[in-house]
Image 1 (tube, rainbow, N blue to C red):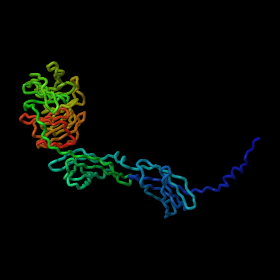
Image 2: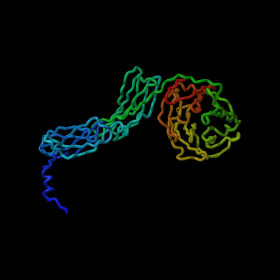
Image 3: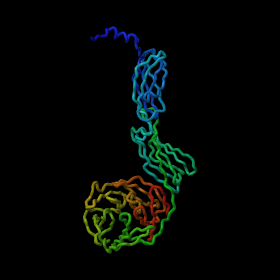
Image 4: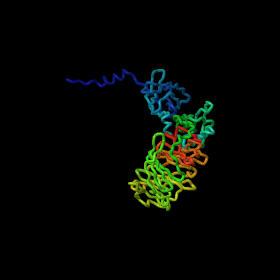
Length: 445
């Protein structure tokens, strides 16, 4: 047999519990992110029995209580700032309560909390140029410009000067150049950007980036036995061999030995006649580039002592004052403007693309001008300062850094890997092994 409860039996168990009373719930929650904190704004209904609002987060393991002080009979706005929050998003749950033990249903909102990772993702300013003047103890810096809507308020630099005093410099939005006075060689500075977003309540700081000035070293180089010739052109091959193209058109090959000494290994008499070519240099993958007296560019190989022409006329009009070979491309330098262009020559004696693109200007003031270890351009200006320009594999030139003084002592500079071979006007060669373009300021006079 089966039986059914009477309808009154079902209603009775709910009646015996009594009526459940809920207070008015929190409504219309709005949040404003801050640095490690957040401002929360919400609205309380006209329910007169609400005494306080409890806000929970971290899976209700953390909470804060905001006492409610009614000042109007209708809907009333309330707010609170919650501190010491982790960066990221946090779920907040709101519940109104009173002293009678009554409570509202929960309301919730997900809120963004800012921190250094958020700040690092903003459009921070960058230090784009470094000029350390050792003689003046002056470090000059260029900064990337600000842009509309980037929320940048200012940038900040901290450093210790040569007397150990702490210095702080604030750089306003419109300033792209700053000088750090009394700056010691080898000293450090810290740089960061400060932001204020209109949607938040705090300024935001990205992590400091630390930069270090080069350490000054006095080094004249090591003199070697090889005597050079001002009438010769020198270039390296794969960082381990020195090639000399002399006034007679001979190609002489030297091997780089321990201690920077050079030993002649081969000679090709009259291989590249000066009457035909005005420039000639090693390029890549056992290939050489020649520039004729008629300003035509050609590609060659040296096989069994002979100069083999791969393409005698890759192009014409190459009337540039100078050429700087790299790996996979070479630069041309114009005489008066110093305009630099990149030329991508393939190993099959054809051109890559894009070709002949201007990448810089003003390089006519540097003499000598070379590629160091196929990573940086090195140039000596009229005052004898040595400058370094980082260079990408596609020929893009970065911001210059002053890395030495007294370099007008040398008339020719050749890079053999990380070794610099430098020649004075009397033909004396001096070697700088394990040369460094980032950590040292080279005083050579």
